Image (tube, rainbow, N blue to C red):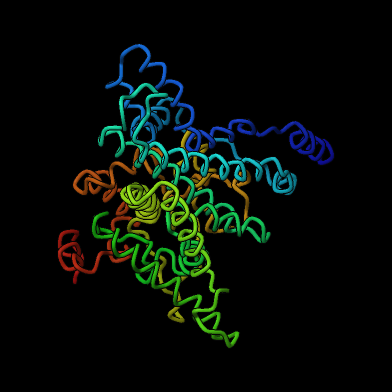
Length: 407
């Protein structure tokens, strides 16, 4: 009997197939969306629809705030976890890492095309008289910012790996959004302090996204610089040495945008600012929703307990997971930071969001709606005990009193 069970288990491993294997290529929609829409814009202009065609330059926000949430609602959760027995094979299958590498050439092709379209004074070849209107330019910058924001997630996937090539590709991907310090702070800061009051990238119960955003942006920047300065001092080097990974990552952004501004002129500067701010604000919206209110408790020795699946909000909605390389399986990622995206698992006992990240990002912008959807979930996760919640210090007395705890 035991032999039959073992044979059946082996057979299950042999026949197991990743049903998402070729669907991972959908992750290339973000960096190619602008390129794909240009022929459609041209065709609409030939038909005399010049005004309507400019709406397509907003394709990034349209995908993010409308299309992906609708698809998540339509297709729902994934439900497939790879068996432990196939993990090593999946980890070693280079096809999956090539899917992330491909993001980069399309990303920078779109950046260059976007820079050209933003500054061009004659777009007659595309069917416009003169340059783009400012509404179209803003949509264009936000679209490029969207691919930059998704690119930060691609950099996140590669930056966790041990191979030098992938770590450098991670910094190259971050150059667009001028957020190279994320490479340091996320790996050596956030993963150490996650779900604690000391982590600038873990949002607190009762803290709005608009309060969290500057705290995370500037707190993460300070932390990244401090971490690299400490590392270099141990090597008897100045923090200003070029081996400082914060400095060399920022230098990539300076070179990238310096060259593009030299080519396309100072008129490109608003484009640089809009796309960068929008891109890293998308990352921070995701940071905000990933650990909202969750807290690692302190043990008897005064240290925080080990990070477990209960310290991250998850969503197994398949469509957004395909676009974000399983980022929504965040609990497994924190438990196994070097695990590749294709092998991340969904844990049924981890706290779960009501929908995919794409749906929840828009909700973070409206604090009353966010709190209506999420606050009761945080409290339910802790059995109604708000003393176990990571509470916003400014609202601590108010929230403790409201939920019946002694201050």
